Image 1 (cartoon, rainbow, N blue to C red):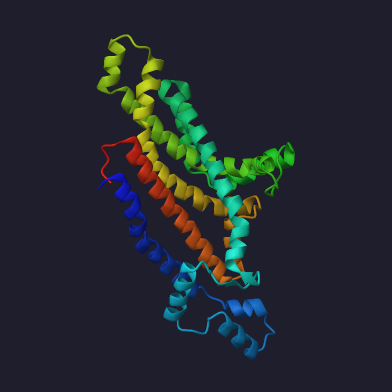
Image 2 (cartoon, rainbow, N blue to C red):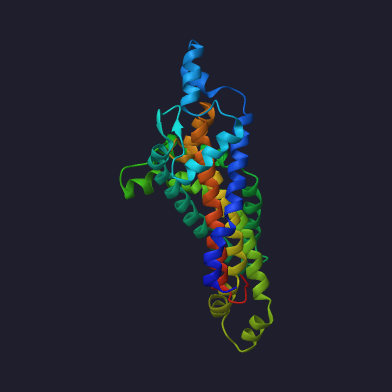
Length: 312
């Protein structure tokens, strides 16, 4: 299968995956205890008012019928009406999608910078104290939850040093970079240990390959061998792992946005769960899942570009 055919067919292959995700999120919310209509109208609402609202939002229909209308409406870009916001869910999501996308990309950039710095240093200093220190930090970093890192950063850089704001997003690009630095750093710290350990091991593996030994026997300097050969040959395994990491980044934004009170999709998802805003939770969960699927699709394409031997 050539690359052009793969790019055309891959989105079609992803349709069953998205349908499965929609079924799971829909059924999980159906099984969640509590009546969203009663939560919206309050404990003093009459039975007639409750029945009217249920009929208005289609919640009085059987579950398969509700799911069918849900899927058909999603295909038309209509994710339903938010019970808490009293308006279209699509409008609520559009207003909050920019901070989440910005935070994910910002966290990815920070994590990649940290990963390359740590992995290159550890591989070039293999067996020395700095290599052991980086490996120890990576092992410890894997076990530290994101919310704990976020709280430590808030206490240190916001409350004590007063360098960064505790929460918010900002109206301009520069404000966004400033407000979201600590949240992005929190996400970056969460995924860097995984990437750095993998990349360090790949660097060392490539440095012991025959071609690297042959380059040394010709008298080429170690820095030249590393930058011209070892570095580029080590990227492919890390790119494959990047697809998993991006999924982790998307999921991590749910926690980080609530720790730093960022008005994004993660914050909206938690608010929807607490208020039992069924249509909001379904739409945000489906949108985050679509983001994971698209990131994996992009990684597949990037893998094929970096290594022509890969069969799509």
